[in-house]
Length: 185
Image (cartoon, rainbow, N blue to C red):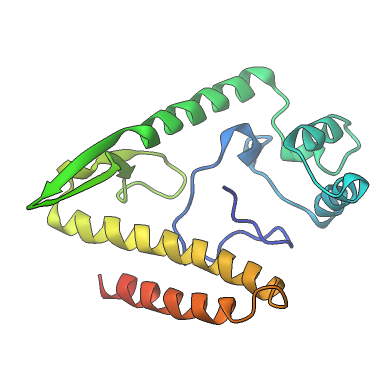
């Protein structure tokens, strides 16, 4: 779930840093740069059929002259290792626990991102082992992630305002509540 804007920008730091998805987050040892040329190439691919597929983008990027080429890791050994790490992240995300409080039962993730780690270093902690202080950090990160997702939804609602009257305004009101709650933790 990348959160890049149409201009290739990344979230402004208000939302939680999301893990890079597989090898596509890195090229030549560092974070990929989504250039205007790469965006134009993606748009051209979409213009051909009216939609995009990841397979089409990878195929176009294989050509060394493609603006998309540098967005990918072409060393198969490195790409395979990155993919295995992404598969491990997926396994971690899929582990669930059931929490019972009085007469209510909730199913939730068993592990969350370790807030003590830097943005570029992956690590997870058991929800059940997080301290009181860590609980506030964890919940703030979750609310910030929701805020980032809400910002995306708001942008989409404004882009389609003619088809969805009033939706953007209502989403903005909800996001304001989420942001307020995050700031209180």
